[in-house]
Length: 267
Image (tube, rainbow, N blue to C red; front, side, top):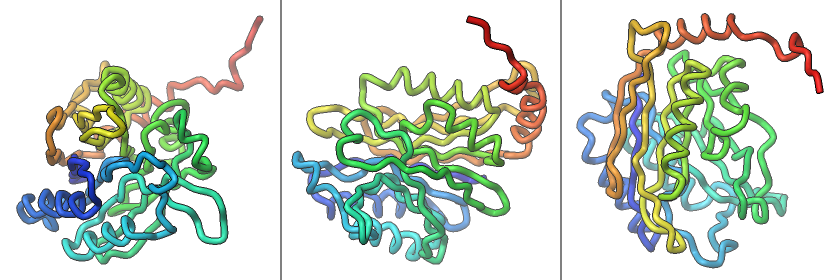
């Protein structure tokens, strides 16, 4: 699975952010031939201090831009996080759209676990989707969804790799790195996490996106292969992940797990 993470810089105006993403994609040689899936960060547009003004109408201008990118460059792409208000509803969602190479919407994943202030503005998603790409299943876990049991739930239901558009600020980078490695190891699943780069509300978001996979031949203990984008600059991170080996590792690991129903609890 050939993955590309677009660690674009957040500028003050939407148009500048659109140009930034297009320029980064233009810099990738033969992207149509050399990529199966492109992912953007959770946030790739600057925030208005009035958070309500950041909410798009359903399938609004941010959606339309990514849709055009998919069709123009003939690439499968994940939109990162889009803040939108659904038609015929007063509820707002953080959602990530999946477009195919023809610019068609395949589906969307709503953020399930909302982080702190998000709970005041958004409704949590209640469904985790499995998407099919070239015969392989994957799930989109938006930032905080990488915590708790969501990754394991995805894997146990067939996900072969996890994609995570994220919004991790400078102070949380160390913990974020630990989470990604731990979730990858405990579930024996490759993880690609595309982090935001820029400054939002005086907070620094340094990028350092990651693609985590497994070194072939290392069964016990398994050995992680971690590729990282640089800190504090726009970048493109690419890797070609062999899904067959972690699929073998995962099959073996899941057989070793004891069902929680079989464990007695004594207080």
